[in-house]
Length: 429
Image 1: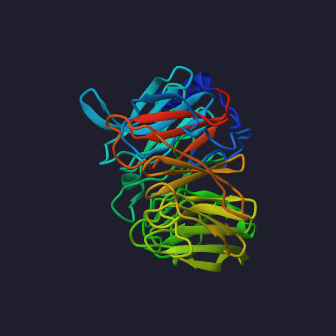
Image 2: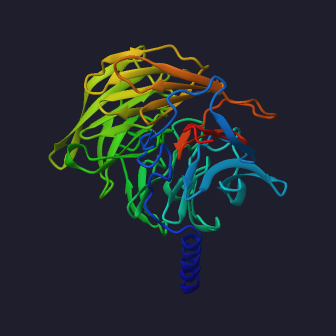
Image 3: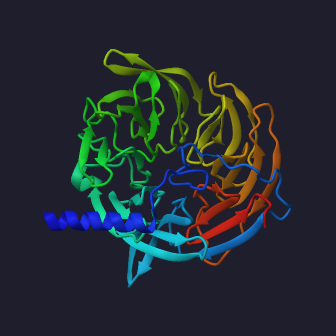
């Protein structure tokens, strides 16, 4: 036992020495949807329009493998996941890349491959990397060298299950000393683990075994609605909230669920949570209020699928407004007034099929499945399309362009399976 503890301490120390801990700042994008998990960058000074041929392509690289994972960036190192062929075996890996040289630092096996690769974006925090494979393999790795610190499996350790057949897709959440994730099991819908050791802090069991309906494809966000800190996500049978301190199941909102795939990450703001799914479902703004020892979630309004439904491109909040990708298998740009659900404007998309959106410097960047990029002002009063361009085509660059864009340090990072492209969107090149 003492030897095991000593090895654990050595692995943690090696990660800390090679990637010293610090609070993620403007120079970091440490997790899914950025520092605050809201798809809004703190970046300023960006180009208000792109050149006709698109912003300058600073560099491109390949070798990331197959997958829909986006990227995390901390202290000049990029982290992502992909299915790779290593030593004659195809497996799912987490990898780290030195952005100054574009050379791999390490790659670590997570679990078996999937038809089209992993979906999780690694979470990087204080010298550790947390990632989830499609078979439910949750790993904690030393960020400096990729050595495994601990591992869990959602099915084996928590009786986990998915709502449908596309396997696990969430990106784990670090909150203080805890790691929060969603196995989807009847006795462990969500779990909190000690992020350093993997030991169970709590398991959240719904009041009825199948109330949550297995894990969805969403990722957890933090809410303080009703004065109670809680974790909110969308599972197989609807949106749920569990108490952060204990894992107590607080509330369940079923109307937003569809039976196929509940995907988008919720937006939490004050006492409110906005949720949406595709497949002809719709959207709701929920108000959370303290109710005895629990929390009550009531819909302020419901938007039908024709008004706003989000498949998997996401939505985000800027001030009092939501901007998102509307439509099933689509990404029509839309702006909603958060408090009322009023459609401020809604326009036809320029790219094809699903679109993923991020905001930086009050500019929206939509990335479409056909790799067309659109630059739109985050102006609730009216729609202003500023520019478009398309990623170059490369050999073997098949499949949809689904990975969400990342904006950091004046650069736009776009992944398509094995390839990664980096563009100058600040006009500094």
